[in-house]
Amino acid sequence: EATVTVRLTLNGIPVTVGVSPNAILLDVLREQLGLTGPKKGCDHGQCGACTVHVDGRAMNACLRLAVMCEGQAIITIEGLAGAGHLHPVQQAFLDHDAFQCGYCSPGQIMSAVALLEDRRIAGDVATVREAMSGNLCRCGAYQNILAAIQDARL
Ligand code: FES
Image (cartoon, rainbow, N blue to C red; front, side, top):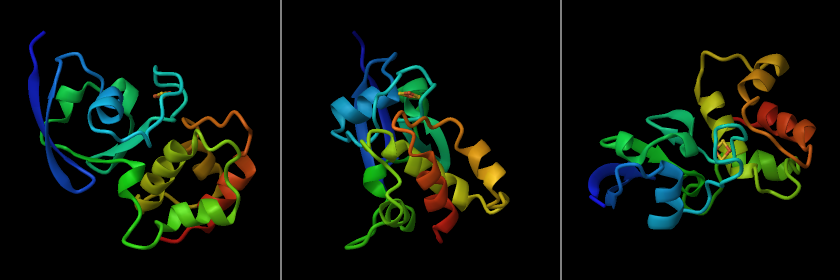
């Protein structure tokens, strides 16, 4: 099968990767680029476990063809923390015990960061709930997730 060369920026680093034309971004990240932070939950856009940022917007990596990412900037959970310190949203999730099994956490955190970076969005509970509605937590840690997001300061 033919391989397509895709150039993108991954967590701030330029990357060139050869992918099959129908390769899904989530699979390329996990299996070719070694970034297993984005999780495969449902693999069809319903759980949010695979959420990454594409040019600053939160997206389900399981719904995106890798070839569509040519020239784009992708950020995964691996790219959030600074040198020697967690991202404020990661720290807030820790402080609020905003997880149980942790499988959904990378996606939850990436969605929360995108939400908080969007200054147009007010931080009221209803808005946060709506913005986070694409991220499911089967453990039901929603109260603590909500508390963490409301408490996080970028
Ligand atoms: Fe992508 Fe569930 S794995 S939304």
